[in-house]
Length: 315
Length: 292
Image 1 (cartoon, rainbow over the protein chains, first blue to last red):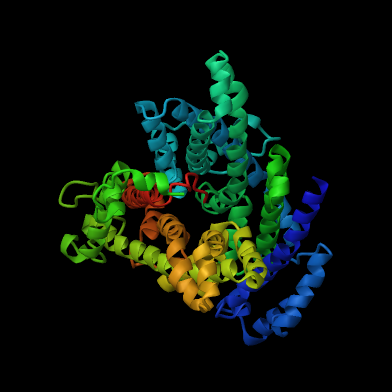
Image 2 (tube, rainbow over the protein chains, first blue to last red):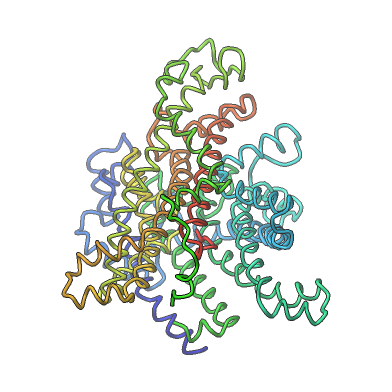
């Protein structure tokens, strides 16, 4: 197991290197001049030159890149152009919001997705199954930001139950924290719920066909026991798969959901810095989120190996 | 191996067995109807739209659905139905372009990585790196860097989905590569490119087609997000995403401006997902669990 973990970790290193390369170069695709965008339309040529110099944009691409790597390796992601803080601080400040949002969404996903999938599989090819499968399909087809708007219409405008946006920290008031995140996390969760329900159903159907399930039934074990002890254990695998995929989907979704609900999270940080041409923040945010996802995938791989010994020797 | 099967009396071979099975797949048919409807609307936009999509009638602003405007009017007094069908043209166009670019580039990369062992590591690590980013984040960064336009949206989304296609192609190539007929072709002195074209590609096609159908669905969804955030084709060109963005500001008074384009996205994506499910069931039954 330790050897497996080591090889996976080593395999992740070149990926991380390429990830950092992409993070750095993406913003250099810009055809326009970032210095003049930052300076604004009123800036004089000297002012723009000064900005260019300050950011090091007057130096050759390779030199800029090496300098960036030098700083990043020391944990220095640079200073934000617009926010008057360091990139690291800007990201760290926003982690709690996106983290709360993701955890709540993930919780909803598992609580709704797994039972729905299991029930659909147990009642395969009935009306219940059709309803669950249909809902799951709808879930993966609805654009989250549109759902977010429609939820606002229903729960904030018509029913006036929930706030239309804004974030309340947990420490301030747990109830308001929950209320501020309820609609955003539901909008985010629907996609994953659909995915998880579908995958759980497929796995469950597969498991129910296995010989050991038939044996368990044949020796007279009650149905509840068979499902609870033998079948549900195997459903863990798709749950872990979906959680692994989910972090990427949640972060993707957070950009647009945090924008709709004006939540000060990572997604919104990236969106605003992209539109403000805040190079250091864009590079830092991309690098940090992608690195986190690589690590999450690594953990998911290791979890697989821990659950299923075949994985350890198979590859 | 197939001796027992050969003993059974042979049914007369039917033509197009795959098509027949597809048309017996109920969900596939529903998907076909949904997606087909959107395609018809997009192609016949000029004939279907009751008004010019850009025509502003300020006295007709915020008309609710019904009276003269089937789906109502927006904040500029433009007919939403007309904008919706022209938006369909753009959404489907961008989605299809992404499928085309992704299909070609992903296939080439996947074939190269799966067939030539020495290319496998470098190519797939590069694909892993691109897949490490949250899809929409990367697409947004690229599209914003290149500037808001339909072509740039296609480029940004293709970069995001090429790795996901290449991985599928590579997986099936690695299976096909070991088949006896490929080994035989090699033994006969067949050139690699010819073997790839004649043997490997046709046998890797089924999962590719399934994957591209799903990518069409993702691309339509992702394009609407880019447009919603303002890095898609810029207004006044109607796209479903920027229509929702405009409707967002009037969501309290005129919910219908944002509602219709969202429903259009739902139906299109649902249709494509159903088509993908159907194609997977028929073409590639092993792939029961689809991962995004």
